[in-house]
Length: 513
Image (cartoon, helix red, strand yellow):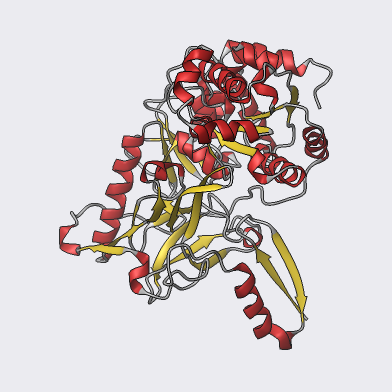
C-alpha cells in the first residue's frame, strides 16, 4: 500500500490509500480529475506539468552580451522556517465561523501571523455553501491582498473606482449607467473586506451610500452582512487623514469584534513574538531596541550567511532597481541568458492588474525566486516559499529547487507550470491571466510583503514612512529573530494613539469572542 496526497488549486488536500499495482491507473485518474479548464487553447497543459508547445510559454531571451558585468552573489537556499499551512480551525476561529454563519457582521483582527486570512477563507467557503457563490463578495483594499484571498479589490467590486462620492445623488450619477454594478450590489448577501487597515473612512462611507442606493434599502450597507478583516496596527490608508473605524458607517454596522490570539508564524520563538507585540503597539522597551540593534548590518553589506536573503524596501522603485541589478549580475557571473516569461492574458486588459502574476517575469538559471501560490502545502511549497532556479525543462518550464517550509522535508525540486488567475464580478469572468507563480526574490516592497511569511529578511529602514505600521509589517514577516537583519536606524515606533484607544475599547467589550 502507498498514499497519494492530492492538492487542489484551492489548496485543499486529499490523501488516497492505494495498492501499488494501481499506480498507473491512479495517476491517470488524477490527471483527468484535476486538469484545469482549457481557455487558452490546445497548447495549454496540466497544472505544474509540461506544456505541449515551446511557443505556449511566451518565452523570450536576453543575449548574454547585453548584460552589464556586476559583482558576484551567493545563491545557496536559506534554511527552513515554519509557517502556517492549511490546518484545522482553532476553537476561537471555529466559534467565529459559527457567528458568521448566523448572519452577524464581524470585525476580525489580531497580530500578524494569527491566521486572519485562513479564517477568512473558511468563512467565505462556508457562506458560499449556505448561499450562492455569486452572492459572496470577497474583496481587499489592495490588488496583492485580493490575490491572496482569491478575490477582487473593493474599488472594482463597488464600481466606485478611485471615486469617493459623499452623497446619494453623486453615487447615482456615478453608478446609474452601470447596470452590472447595480445588479452585483443587489444580489450580494455578504461583503468581505480584507486588509481593512488600508480602507479610508471616506471610501467606507461611499461604499455604504453605494450599497443603499443600489439595493434601495436604508439599513447600513443596504442590509448586507459585512465581514471586515485586518489589523489597524499595520499599514494605514494612503493619503488619508482618518481610519475606517472612525467613520459613522463602521459604528452603524454593529460589528461583533474578534481578536485572534494564537500566533502561528512566531510560535517557535516566544521572545521574538513578545517583542513584536510591543513593536505593534508602540510600547518597545530599551531592551527591545538593544536586541534589534544586534541584527543591524552596514548599509552596503549583506548578512553573514551563505544564502541570499530577501530584502524589504519601503519604495517600489528600490525593489525594481535591486531585482533588475541582481538578476543581471547573476546572468553575467554564470554566463547564462535571461528569459522573459510573458503572461497569457484574456479579457479586459484594464483589469489585468487585478489578476495575480506579473505581465513580464524575467528569470535566469541561478536566480532567487519566491513562490506566489500554494503548489503543494503538504510538501511545504506554499505562498512565500523561497527557491533557486536551477534549469529549464525541454518545454521551457522553470525548474526550481525550493527550501520546504515544512520541518524535516528539506529541499524540494519542482517543475513549475503556469497558474491561472481569474478576475470575476459575481459569476462573470471578465479577465484572466496565466503566468508562472514566481517573483524575483532578491527584494520585495513592504506593502507587497504583507501577508507573506518569509524565512529570512533584510529590512531597509531608510525611507520608512507612515509611523510604526510599516516597521511592524516588515519585522513580522519572519518567524524568529535569527531570520532578521536590518539596515539603518530604527526610529521612533510610538504606535497610533487612535488605534491604541480603539483596541483598548473593543478588547474591553464583553461580546468579543
